Length: 158
Image 1 (spheres, rainbow, N blue to C red):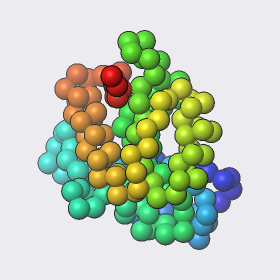
Image 2: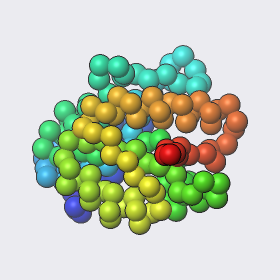
Image 3: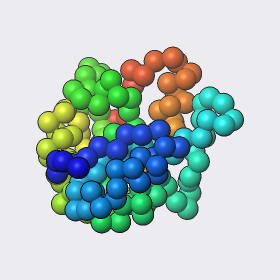
Image 4: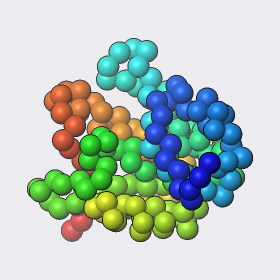
């Protein structure tokens, strides 16, 4: 696999197989942006989470790629707004990230998220994906309720 940075953006039920097909040894020491969400559509739409509370999709990806530098990011917004998210009311939206490798999170923040126009907040280790994935489900639920993906999250401070 070529490149220093890999984006994993698969449907959850194909994630493990995609990683196996790509061969985990090709991910060694590479920064991997995990944009997946462990969505379960078996009960309809909106979906539920297939993993949660005591585990997460992000942690599963880290276990599948133990020598990769996983950063959970881009899972809380629709793909049309990942690059140059222009939301005129309130400034740039907030992208929450998590991962165990501080250097990898800095690379994703400085070289990708900042250049794409995101404010970034690091919420901790890969276990914090347990918070990001339900946040994505909130985004998805609102998407199905309004039939539009023109929304993003913003952390406001006082």
